[in-house]
Image (cartoon, rainbow, N blue to C red; front, side, top):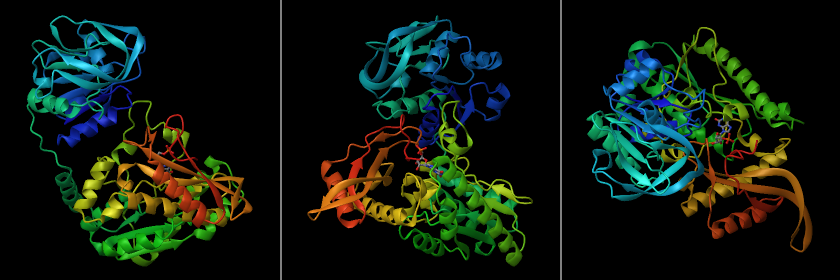
Length: 515
Ligand code: XMP
């Protein structure tokens, strides 16, 4: 594996993902992992991530003495990125200082040496920078490999050992030759072969699960790619007779969604599908509730209740359930640094709602994979493209896209608007270009004029973002024509709406969903 030591940077997961894209296995470990933990993974290289701290601060995150000593020994190649670069410079005896001005965004970088790291890239190239501290004095026995106007040491290496530091972020797409630089580090400097393919890994996983499991498994399916892929893996492991699917219609789903999910499940070969129509129950529990967290809590609790009673019913009819399979993916499991997954505290996401049930073991076949890897696995398992590439949809569904109280009327309006947005995005080819695109019903009415008559109706906000992993997101600068068409269709075709707004806020400071 390539071990990424995580110093709390927002890009730590991205580094691991990029390495996997280059077909090398990669895992994240906390920056203070012990030498034993690191060595247990048989690392071919160690990458030190970026992070928000300053190396000269008293509590700056640093590896243990033992790990530092090993990192500097040259036994395995080491690459420091941003904070990691500054940390290596400091550990090797250089100097890092805070500068007056930050270097943030795109920078022109000049490559000064003909080094393996930059092989196949031009002398002058654009890189992505995000720092204020900088290496101001080169450590002894190292050479400068690159510079920018702001950074005297944009990259350096040790003269005798495979120890490298880069101030810029090769993992960020805006760095023109970032992937080539990462590939050079892996292929040329570590010499390791790119031989990790997610499709093979999942076949291995299926074989392994076949050997060690027996009995019945139950999967709660939401309709999203993670849960359907998990269920399909279970089908391969246990066979259709022993796989039980629970699918709950909360009434908070999109138009035609329950039917669509059921049809997909049937076409994938599932035989025991336990469909629960809980529309009335959810709506009655949500009556009068306006607080976002309260809504999320009620939905999660109601879901759990239904789930537990369904498990009991299934057991009565089919015998003991031995396993519960969940669609947990790698970023859900491994918190990056202290900063990320902060959303978990901002909103109580309901993914792992089921938790422990007595006598039932949890299986998480996707726990080692990133979303884009899950998509590859899903395609390999024959899951239809519409499911594989669909945008994320939150567990609490449309309830968090209706500000304030959820009512049947508002749900019906939002369902129609959602359908229009999805249709227009698919038709224009924009669907696959964005992370998410959806309308939100603001429980707010404004005055308008429809057919010469005064109207007093709801406002809909359109939210369209691009993102790598939902931790940060930017609103998308859509063409006016598309916005125009969507606005026109919503105000004409959806009764009860006379105004459409476009959300031009990034995350942070906003979140992707409104509640
Ligand atoms: P926020 O609104 O926190 O959303 O910026 C980040 C991403 O998570 C999705 N989301 C959820 N997903 N259960 C989920 O499985 C939830 O409760 C939930 N809430 C938000 C959201 O759609 C976005 O992609």
